[in-house]
Amino acid sequence: MLIKVCGMRDPENIRAIEGLNINWLGFIFSPQSSRYVSKKPSYLPTRQKRVGVFVDADIEEVREKVEEYGLDIIQLHGKECPSYIHTLRSQCGNQVITIIKALNIATATDLEQTRPYEGIVDYFLFDTKAKMVGGNGTQFDWSVLTAYKSSTPFLLSGGIGPDDAEKVKAFRHPSCMGIDLNSCFEKKPALKDITLLKQFIDTIGTIDTIGTIKNIKTMNKINKLFSENKDKKLLSLYFCAGCPTLEGTADVIKTMERRGIAMVEVGIPFSDPMADGPVIQDAATNALKNGMSLHKLFTQLETIKNEVSIPLVLMGYLNPIMQYGIEAFCKSCVESGVSGVIIPDLPFKDYQEVVKPIADRYDIRIIMLITPETSEERIRFIDEHTDGFIYMVSSAAITGAQKSFDEAKQEYFRRINAMNLRNPRMIGFGISNKQTLEAAQQNAAGAIIGSKFVTLLSESKDADEALDKLFQALEQ
Image (tube, rainbow, N blue to C red; front, side, top):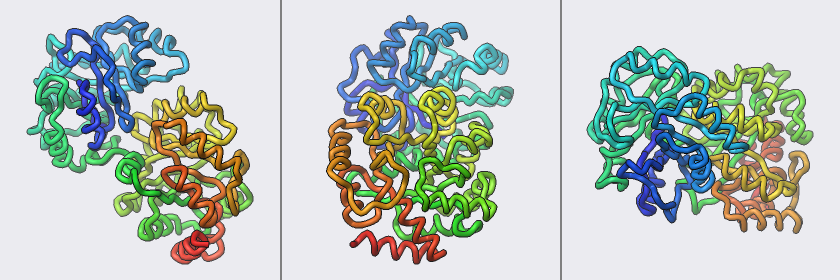
Protein backbone atom coordinates (compact mmCIF):
# COMPACT_ATOMS: atom_id res chain seq x y z
CA MET A 1 0.00 0.00 0.00
CA LEU A 2 1.27 3.45 -0.90
CA ILE A 3 1.87 6.10 1.74
CA LYS A 4 1.68 9.72 0.60
CA VAL A 5 2.60 12.59 2.89
CA CYS A 6 1.27 15.90 1.61
CA GLY A 7 1.88 19.54 2.43
CA MET A 8 5.69 19.54 2.40
CA ARG A 9 7.76 22.73 2.24
CA ASP A 10 10.66 22.81 4.71
CA PRO A 11 13.95 21.41 3.25
CA GLU A 12 15.15 19.79 6.48
CA ASN A 13 11.71 18.31 7.10
CA ILE A 14 11.82 16.84 3.60
CA ARG A 15 15.24 15.30 4.31
CA ALA A 16 13.98 13.79 7.55
CA ILE A 17 10.88 12.29 5.96
CA GLU A 18 12.98 10.88 3.14
CA GLY A 19 14.41 8.43 5.67
CA LEU A 20 10.98 6.98 6.45
CA ASN A 21 9.16 4.24 4.56
CA ILE A 22 7.05 6.66 2.55
CA ASN A 23 6.36 6.46 -1.19
CA TRP A 24 5.15 9.91 -2.27
CA LEU A 25 5.68 13.46 -1.00
CA GLY A 26 3.19 16.17 -1.93
CA PHE A 27 3.73 19.88 -2.59
CA ILE A 28 0.70 22.17 -2.63
CA PHE A 29 0.69 24.91 -5.28
CA SER A 30 -2.61 26.54 -4.32
CA PRO A 31 -2.11 30.05 -2.81
CA GLN A 32 -5.23 29.58 -0.66
CA SER A 33 -3.57 26.78 1.30
CA SER A 34 -1.56 27.39 4.48
CA ARG A 35 0.89 24.86 3.05
CA TYR A 36 1.35 26.74 -0.22
CA VAL A 37 4.81 26.36 -1.73
CA SER A 38 5.59 29.80 -3.11
CA LYS A 39 9.31 29.20 -3.55
CA LYS A 40 11.15 26.06 -4.58
CA PRO A 41 12.72 24.42 -1.49
CA SER A 42 16.49 24.14 -1.49
CA TYR A 43 16.11 20.38 -1.20
CA LEU A 44 13.65 18.06 -2.94
CA PRO A 45 13.19 14.32 -2.33
CA THR A 46 15.27 11.92 -4.38
CA ARG A 47 13.84 8.64 -3.07
CA GLN A 48 10.12 9.41 -3.14
CA LYS A 49 7.83 10.36 -6.01
CA ARG A 50 7.07 14.09 -6.11
CA VAL A 51 3.40 15.03 -6.20
CA GLY A 52 2.20 18.50 -7.18
CA VAL A 53 -1.23 19.51 -5.86
CA PHE A 54 -3.13 22.05 -7.98
CA VAL A 55 -6.56 23.68 -7.73
CA ASP A 56 -8.04 24.87 -11.02
CA ALA A 57 -4.61 26.07 -12.12
CA ASP A 58 -3.76 27.28 -15.60
CA ILE A 59 -2.33 24.39 -17.63
CA GLU A 60 0.81 26.35 -18.45
CA GLU A 61 1.40 26.91 -14.73
CA VAL A 62 1.06 23.19 -14.07
CA ARG A 63 3.42 22.36 -16.90
CA GLU A 64 6.00 24.83 -15.58
CA LYS A 65 5.82 23.33 -12.07
CA VAL A 66 6.21 19.83 -13.49
CA GLU A 67 9.43 20.91 -15.16
CA GLU A 68 10.75 23.08 -12.32
CA TYR A 69 10.10 20.57 -9.53
CA GLY A 70 10.58 17.37 -11.51
CA LEU A 71 7.08 16.25 -10.58
CA ASP A 72 6.16 12.61 -11.12
CA ILE A 73 2.49 12.98 -10.24
CA ILE A 74 -0.13 15.71 -10.64
CA GLN A 75 -2.99 15.84 -8.15
CA LEU A 76 -5.95 17.91 -9.29
CA HIS A 77 -8.03 19.16 -6.39
CA GLY A 78 -10.44 21.56 -8.07
CA LYS A 79 -13.16 21.39 -10.70
CA GLU A 80 -10.86 20.22 -13.50
CA CYS A 81 -12.94 18.46 -16.17
CA PRO A 82 -11.87 15.49 -18.35
CA SER A 83 -11.10 17.76 -21.32
CA TYR A 84 -8.75 19.78 -19.08
CA ILE A 85 -6.90 16.56 -18.23
CA HIS A 86 -6.64 15.52 -21.89
CA THR A 87 -5.18 18.94 -22.72
CA LEU A 88 -2.82 18.76 -19.74
CA ARG A 89 -1.44 15.40 -20.86
CA SER A 90 -0.88 16.68 -24.39
CA GLN A 91 0.83 19.84 -23.11
CA CYS A 92 3.25 17.78 -21.02
CA GLY A 93 4.60 16.28 -24.24
CA ASN A 94 7.17 13.57 -23.59
CA GLN A 95 6.74 13.93 -19.84
CA VAL A 96 4.34 11.11 -19.00
CA ILE A 97 2.74 12.13 -15.73
CA THR A 98 0.58 10.12 -13.37
CA ILE A 99 -2.63 12.03 -12.63
CA ILE A 100 -4.75 11.88 -9.48
CA LYS A 101 -8.21 13.43 -9.37
CA ALA A 102 -9.24 14.39 -5.86
CA LEU A 103 -12.94 14.21 -5.09
CA ASN A 104 -14.79 15.29 -1.97
CA ILE A 105 -16.90 12.52 -0.49
CA ALA A 106 -19.65 12.59 2.12
CA THR A 107 -22.21 10.06 0.88
CA ALA A 108 -22.29 7.16 -1.56
CA THR A 109 -24.00 9.45 -4.07
CA ASP A 110 -20.81 11.54 -4.25
CA LEU A 111 -19.05 8.56 -5.83
CA GLU A 112 -20.97 9.27 -9.03
CA GLN A 113 -18.39 12.03 -9.59
CA THR A 114 -15.86 9.37 -10.61
CA ARG A 115 -17.69 8.28 -13.77
CA PRO A 116 -16.55 11.06 -16.17
CA TYR A 117 -12.92 10.44 -15.17
CA GLU A 118 -12.84 6.66 -15.62
CA GLY A 119 -10.06 5.70 -18.02
CA ILE A 120 -8.71 9.26 -17.95
CA VAL A 121 -6.98 9.51 -14.57
CA ASP A 122 -4.65 7.01 -12.93
CA TYR A 123 -5.96 7.38 -9.37
CA PHE A 124 -8.74 8.97 -7.41
CA LEU A 125 -8.14 10.55 -4.02
CA PHE A 126 -11.21 10.50 -1.79
CA ASP A 127 -11.14 13.40 0.64
CA THR A 128 -13.49 15.04 3.13
CA LYS A 129 -15.81 17.79 1.93
CA ALA A 130 -14.39 21.09 3.17
CA LYS A 131 -13.90 24.71 2.17
CA MET A 132 -10.10 24.59 2.06
CA VAL A 133 -7.90 22.25 0.03
CA GLY A 134 -5.56 19.88 1.84
CA GLY A 135 -4.98 19.38 5.54
CA ASN A 136 -8.51 19.84 6.89
CA GLY A 137 -8.07 17.34 9.71
CA THR A 138 -11.55 15.83 9.43
CA GLN A 139 -12.71 12.43 8.20
CA PHE A 140 -15.66 11.27 6.16
CA ASP A 141 -17.48 7.99 6.71
CA TRP A 142 -15.26 5.43 4.98
CA SER A 143 -18.09 2.88 4.92
CA VAL A 144 -19.69 4.76 2.00
CA LEU A 145 -16.81 3.50 -0.16
CA THR A 146 -18.36 0.03 -0.22
CA ALA A 147 -20.49 1.49 -3.03
CA TYR A 148 -17.36 2.19 -5.11
CA LYS A 149 -17.12 -0.64 -7.68
CA SER A 150 -14.62 0.81 -10.16
CA SER A 151 -11.22 -0.76 -10.78
CA THR A 152 -9.53 2.67 -10.86
CA PRO A 153 -7.40 2.63 -7.71
CA PHE A 154 -7.85 5.27 -5.03
CA LEU A 155 -6.04 6.81 -2.09
CA LEU A 156 -7.85 7.37 1.18
CA SER A 157 -7.50 10.89 2.56
CA GLY A 158 -9.05 13.30 5.01
CA GLY A 159 -8.10 13.60 8.65
CA ILE A 160 -6.11 10.38 9.04
CA GLY A 161 -4.15 10.85 12.26
CA PRO A 162 -1.81 9.09 14.70
CA ASP A 163 -4.73 7.43 16.50
CA ASP A 164 -6.18 5.93 13.32
CA ALA A 165 -3.67 3.11 12.79
CA GLU A 166 -6.11 0.39 13.82
CA LYS A 167 -8.87 1.93 11.72
CA VAL A 168 -6.60 1.98 8.68
CA LYS A 169 -5.61 -1.63 9.34
CA ALA A 170 -9.26 -2.65 9.51
CA PHE A 171 -10.25 -0.88 6.28
CA ARG A 172 -10.65 -3.18 3.28
CA HIS A 173 -11.38 -2.33 -0.33
CA PRO A 174 -10.03 -4.05 -3.48
CA SER A 175 -9.26 -0.71 -5.18
CA CYS A 176 -7.62 1.04 -2.23
CA MET A 177 -3.96 1.54 -3.12
CA GLY A 178 -2.84 3.85 -0.34
CA ILE A 179 -3.40 6.58 2.21
CA ASP A 180 -2.71 10.31 2.25
CA LEU A 181 -1.38 11.90 5.45
CA ASN A 182 -1.19 15.61 6.19
CA SER A 183 -2.32 17.99 8.93
CA CYS A 184 -2.84 15.47 11.74
CA PHE A 185 0.90 14.77 11.69
CA GLU A 186 2.03 18.40 11.84
CA LYS A 187 3.69 20.59 14.43
CA LYS A 188 2.47 23.53 12.37
CA PRO A 189 1.32 23.90 8.75
CA ALA A 190 3.84 22.33 6.35
CA LEU A 191 6.08 21.02 9.16
CA LYS A 192 5.57 17.31 9.84
CA ASP A 193 6.23 15.53 13.13
CA ILE A 194 8.71 12.82 12.15
CA THR A 195 8.26 10.87 15.38
CA LEU A 196 4.48 10.65 14.96
CA LEU A 197 4.83 9.55 11.34
CA LYS A 198 7.35 6.84 12.19
CA GLN A 199 5.23 5.53 15.06
CA PHE A 200 2.16 5.45 12.84
CA ILE A 201 3.93 3.53 10.08
CA ASP A 202 5.42 1.07 12.56
CA THR A 203 2.04 0.53 14.21
CA ILE A 204 0.22 -0.18 10.97
CA GLY A 205 2.46 -3.11 10.07
CA THR A 206 1.06 -5.52 7.50
CA ILE A 207 -2.21 -4.92 5.70
CA ASP A 208 -3.54 -7.72 3.49
CA THR A 209 -5.87 -5.88 1.15
CA ILE A 210 -6.96 -7.79 -1.93
CA GLY A 211 -5.45 -6.36 -5.07
CA THR A 212 -3.07 -4.01 -3.26
CA ILE A 213 0.50 -4.06 -2.16
CA LYS A 214 0.67 -6.18 0.95
CA ASN A 215 2.97 -4.39 3.34
CA ILE A 216 2.43 -0.76 4.23
CA LYS A 217 5.33 -0.78 6.68
CA THR A 218 8.00 -1.02 4.01
CA MET A 219 8.69 0.93 0.88
CA ASN A 220 9.45 -0.99 -2.28
CA LYS A 221 12.20 -3.48 -1.39
CA ILE A 222 14.53 -2.12 -4.07
CA ASN A 223 14.32 1.42 -2.71
CA LYS A 224 14.67 0.11 0.82
CA LEU A 225 17.79 -1.87 -0.12
CA PHE A 226 19.61 1.15 -1.51
CA SER A 227 18.32 3.50 1.18
CA GLU A 228 19.66 1.29 3.97
CA ASN A 229 22.97 0.40 2.29
CA LYS A 230 24.30 3.70 0.99
CA ASP A 231 27.81 2.96 2.27
CA LYS A 232 27.82 -0.75 1.40
CA LYS A 233 28.72 -2.26 -1.95
CA LEU A 234 26.02 -4.68 -3.04
CA LEU A 235 26.16 -7.91 -4.99
CA SER A 236 23.23 -9.06 -7.11
CA LEU A 237 23.07 -12.34 -9.02
CA TYR A 238 21.11 -13.41 -12.06
CA PHE A 239 19.91 -16.88 -12.95
CA CYS A 240 17.34 -18.23 -15.38
CA ALA A 241 14.15 -19.61 -13.86
CA GLY A 242 13.72 -23.31 -14.64
CA CYS A 243 17.42 -23.98 -15.17
CA PRO A 244 19.07 -26.29 -14.29
CA THR A 245 15.82 -27.86 -13.01
CA LEU A 246 12.17 -26.86 -13.33
CA GLU A 247 11.36 -27.01 -9.62
CA GLY A 248 14.65 -25.59 -8.35
CA THR A 249 13.90 -21.86 -8.72
CA ALA A 250 12.66 -21.32 -5.16
CA ASP A 251 15.61 -23.16 -3.63
CA VAL A 252 18.13 -21.12 -5.65
CA ILE A 253 16.59 -17.86 -4.44
CA LYS A 254 16.44 -18.91 -0.79
CA THR A 255 20.03 -20.16 -0.95
CA MET A 256 21.20 -16.85 -2.43
CA GLU A 257 19.58 -14.90 0.39
CA ARG A 258 21.03 -17.23 3.02
CA ARG A 259 24.51 -16.73 1.51
CA GLY A 260 24.29 -12.93 1.63
CA ILE A 261 23.26 -11.93 -1.89
CA ALA A 262 21.57 -8.52 -1.69
CA MET A 263 19.20 -8.80 -4.66
CA VAL A 264 18.22 -11.56 -7.08
CA GLU A 265 17.44 -11.17 -10.77
CA VAL A 266 15.29 -14.01 -12.03
CA GLY A 267 15.39 -14.50 -15.78
CA ILE A 268 12.17 -15.23 -17.66
CA PRO A 269 13.20 -17.75 -20.35
CA PHE A 270 12.46 -16.67 -23.91
CA SER A 271 13.16 -18.30 -27.26
CA ASP A 272 14.86 -15.23 -28.77
CA PRO A 273 16.97 -13.50 -26.07
CA MET A 274 18.66 -10.88 -28.25
CA ALA A 275 20.73 -9.19 -25.51
CA ASP A 276 22.12 -12.41 -24.07
CA GLY A 277 25.25 -14.34 -24.87
CA PRO A 278 25.48 -18.10 -25.47
CA VAL A 279 25.56 -19.02 -21.76
CA ILE A 280 22.24 -17.40 -20.90
CA GLN A 281 20.74 -18.38 -24.27
CA ASP A 282 21.49 -22.03 -23.47
CA ALA A 283 20.03 -21.64 -19.98
CA ALA A 284 16.83 -20.18 -21.44
CA THR A 285 16.58 -22.99 -23.98
CA ASN A 286 17.00 -25.62 -21.25
CA ALA A 287 14.46 -23.88 -19.02
CA LEU A 288 11.86 -23.88 -21.78
CA LYS A 289 12.55 -27.56 -22.46
CA ASN A 290 12.06 -28.22 -18.74
CA GLY A 291 8.61 -26.66 -18.97
CA MET A 292 9.19 -23.24 -17.38
CA SER A 293 6.65 -20.55 -18.21
CA LEU A 294 5.72 -17.17 -16.79
CA HIS A 295 2.63 -18.64 -15.11
CA LYS A 296 4.73 -21.42 -13.60
CA LEU A 297 7.33 -18.92 -12.38
CA PHE A 298 4.77 -16.74 -10.60
CA THR A 299 3.30 -19.82 -8.93
CA GLN A 300 6.75 -20.83 -7.67
CA LEU A 301 7.59 -17.35 -6.41
CA GLU A 302 4.28 -17.01 -4.60
CA THR A 303 5.10 -20.08 -2.49
CA ILE A 304 8.19 -18.37 -1.03
CA LYS A 305 7.14 -14.71 -0.90
CA ASN A 306 6.82 -14.80 2.89
CA GLU A 307 10.21 -16.52 3.27
CA VAL A 308 12.32 -14.13 1.18
CA SER A 309 13.09 -10.58 2.33
CA ILE A 310 15.57 -9.45 -0.34
CA PRO A 311 14.32 -7.77 -3.54
CA LEU A 312 13.39 -10.01 -6.46
CA VAL A 313 13.70 -8.49 -9.92
CA LEU A 314 12.38 -10.25 -13.01
CA MET A 315 14.39 -9.87 -16.20
CA GLY A 316 12.66 -10.76 -19.42
CA TYR A 317 11.77 -9.69 -22.91
CA LEU A 318 8.70 -7.73 -23.87
CA ASN A 319 6.96 -10.38 -25.98
CA PRO A 320 6.01 -12.86 -23.23
CA ILE A 321 5.07 -10.03 -20.87
CA MET A 322 2.75 -8.49 -23.46
CA GLN A 323 1.19 -11.90 -24.09
CA TYR A 324 0.58 -12.23 -20.35
CA GLY A 325 -0.90 -8.71 -20.24
CA ILE A 326 0.79 -5.72 -18.58
CA GLU A 327 -1.88 -5.23 -15.93
CA ALA A 328 -2.06 -8.95 -15.13
CA PHE A 329 1.74 -9.14 -15.10
CA CYS A 330 2.13 -6.31 -12.59
CA LYS A 331 -0.62 -7.76 -10.40
CA SER A 332 1.12 -11.16 -10.44
CA CYS A 333 4.41 -9.46 -9.54
CA VAL A 334 2.80 -8.00 -6.42
CA GLU A 335 1.14 -11.27 -5.48
CA SER A 336 4.41 -13.20 -5.85
CA GLY A 337 6.69 -10.72 -4.06
CA VAL A 338 8.48 -9.24 -7.08
CA SER A 339 9.74 -5.67 -6.59
CA GLY A 340 11.02 -4.75 -10.03
CA VAL A 341 11.30 -5.74 -13.68
CA ILE A 342 14.01 -5.33 -16.32
CA ILE A 343 12.81 -5.46 -19.93
CA PRO A 344 15.86 -4.97 -22.20
CA ASP A 345 13.85 -4.53 -25.41
CA LEU A 346 11.21 -2.18 -23.99
CA PRO A 347 11.08 1.03 -26.10
CA PHE A 348 11.19 4.09 -23.88
CA LYS A 349 8.04 5.51 -25.46
CA ASP A 350 6.14 2.31 -24.63
CA TYR A 351 7.57 2.45 -21.13
CA GLN A 352 6.24 5.97 -20.63
CA GLU A 353 2.88 5.60 -22.31
CA VAL A 354 1.92 2.00 -21.54
CA VAL A 355 4.01 0.27 -18.90
CA LYS A 356 4.91 2.98 -16.38
CA PRO A 357 1.38 4.14 -15.50
CA ILE A 358 0.36 0.56 -14.72
CA ALA A 359 3.58 -0.38 -12.92
CA ASP A 360 3.34 2.74 -10.76
CA ARG A 361 -0.12 1.74 -9.61
CA TYR A 362 1.31 -1.54 -8.34
CA ASP A 363 4.51 0.03 -6.97
CA ILE A 364 6.64 -2.10 -9.31
CA ARG A 365 9.96 -0.60 -10.39
CA ILE A 366 10.78 -0.78 -14.10
CA ILE A 367 14.57 -0.77 -14.34
CA MET A 368 16.10 0.78 -17.46
CA LEU A 369 19.48 -0.04 -18.96
CA ILE A 370 22.16 2.36 -20.17
CA THR A 371 25.31 1.55 -22.17
CA PRO A 372 28.51 3.42 -23.08
CA GLU A 373 26.69 4.57 -26.22
CA THR A 374 23.70 6.07 -24.39
CA SER A 375 23.66 9.86 -24.70
CA GLU A 376 23.82 12.11 -21.65
CA GLU A 377 20.44 13.58 -22.55
CA ARG A 378 18.81 10.16 -22.61
CA ILE A 379 20.54 9.09 -19.38
CA ARG A 380 19.23 12.15 -17.57
CA PHE A 381 15.77 11.53 -18.99
CA ILE A 382 15.86 7.92 -17.78
CA ASP A 383 17.10 9.06 -14.38
CA GLU A 384 14.26 11.57 -14.06
CA HIS A 385 11.49 9.18 -15.12
CA THR A 386 12.48 5.92 -13.44
CA ASP A 387 13.00 4.74 -9.90
CA GLY A 388 14.78 1.92 -8.06
CA PHE A 389 18.17 1.84 -9.77
CA ILE A 390 19.76 2.24 -13.19
CA TYR A 391 21.35 -0.82 -14.77
CA MET A 392 24.73 0.25 -16.18
CA VAL A 393 25.64 -2.22 -18.90
CA SER A 394 29.43 -2.39 -19.06
CA SER A 395 29.42 -2.65 -22.85
CA ALA A 396 27.06 -2.51 -25.80
CA ALA A 397 27.78 -6.17 -26.51
CA ILE A 398 25.74 -9.18 -25.38
CA THR A 399 26.09 -10.67 -21.91
CA GLY A 400 29.12 -12.77 -21.00
CA ALA A 401 32.01 -12.96 -18.57
CA GLN A 402 35.09 -10.75 -19.07
CA LYS A 403 38.51 -10.82 -17.43
CA SER A 404 38.88 -7.05 -17.12
CA PHE A 405 37.39 -3.69 -18.02
CA ASP A 406 39.51 -1.67 -20.43
CA GLU A 407 40.19 2.05 -20.15
CA ALA A 408 37.22 2.92 -22.35
CA LYS A 409 34.86 1.17 -19.95
CA GLN A 410 36.55 2.77 -16.95
CA GLU A 411 36.08 6.18 -18.56
CA TYR A 412 32.41 5.35 -19.13
CA PHE A 413 32.03 4.56 -15.42
CA ARG A 414 33.70 7.84 -14.44
CA ARG A 415 31.56 9.82 -16.87
CA ILE A 416 28.34 8.45 -15.41
CA ASN A 417 29.49 9.10 -11.84
CA ALA A 418 30.27 12.71 -12.71
CA MET A 419 26.65 13.21 -13.75
CA ASN A 420 25.46 12.95 -10.10
CA LEU A 421 22.34 11.03 -11.03
CA ARG A 422 19.35 10.75 -8.71
CA ASN A 423 19.12 6.96 -8.91
CA PRO A 424 21.76 4.53 -7.64
CA ARG A 425 23.53 2.49 -10.32
CA MET A 426 24.42 -1.19 -10.57
CA ILE A 427 27.00 -2.38 -13.10
CA GLY A 428 26.45 -5.64 -14.96
CA PHE A 429 27.57 -7.65 -18.02
CA GLY A 430 31.03 -9.20 -17.85
CA ILE A 431 31.78 -9.41 -14.12
CA SER A 432 33.53 -12.68 -13.31
CA ASN A 433 36.60 -12.11 -11.12
CA LYS A 434 38.11 -9.88 -8.44
CA GLN A 435 39.30 -7.24 -10.90
CA THR A 436 35.96 -6.74 -12.63
CA LEU A 437 34.02 -6.95 -9.35
CA GLU A 438 36.15 -4.30 -7.67
CA ALA A 439 35.94 -2.02 -10.71
CA ALA A 440 32.16 -2.28 -10.67
CA GLN A 441 31.84 -1.73 -6.94
CA GLN A 442 34.19 1.25 -7.02
CA ASN A 443 32.08 2.96 -9.66
CA ALA A 444 28.53 2.09 -8.63
CA ALA A 445 26.35 0.95 -5.74
CA GLY A 446 27.23 -2.61 -6.60
CA ALA A 447 27.65 -5.32 -9.19
CA ILE A 448 25.36 -7.72 -11.01
CA ILE A 449 26.75 -11.10 -12.03
CA GLY A 450 24.92 -13.24 -14.55
CA SER A 451 26.77 -15.46 -17.00
CA LYS A 452 29.46 -16.57 -14.56
CA PHE A 453 26.93 -17.76 -11.98
CA VAL A 454 24.65 -19.32 -14.61
CA THR A 455 27.61 -21.36 -15.88
CA LEU A 456 28.54 -22.56 -12.39
CA LEU A 457 24.92 -23.38 -11.51
CA SER A 458 24.42 -25.33 -14.73
CA GLU A 459 27.59 -27.32 -14.06
CA SER A 460 27.02 -28.10 -10.39
CA LYS A 461 23.19 -28.31 -10.31
CA ASP A 462 23.48 -27.10 -6.69
CA ALA A 463 23.15 -23.46 -5.63
CA ASP A 464 25.42 -23.73 -2.59
CA GLU A 465 28.18 -25.36 -4.59
CA ALA A 466 27.81 -22.82 -7.39
CA LEU A 467 28.04 -19.96 -4.88
CA ASP A 468 31.14 -21.48 -3.29
CA LYS A 469 32.85 -21.56 -6.67
CA LEU A 470 31.66 -18.06 -7.54
CA PHE A 471 33.02 -16.57 -4.32
CA GLN A 472 36.34 -18.32 -4.97
CA ALA A 473 36.48 -16.85 -8.48
CA LEU A 474 35.76 -13.38 -7.14
CA GLU A 475 38.82 -13.62 -4.92
CA GLN A 476 41.15 -14.31 -7.85
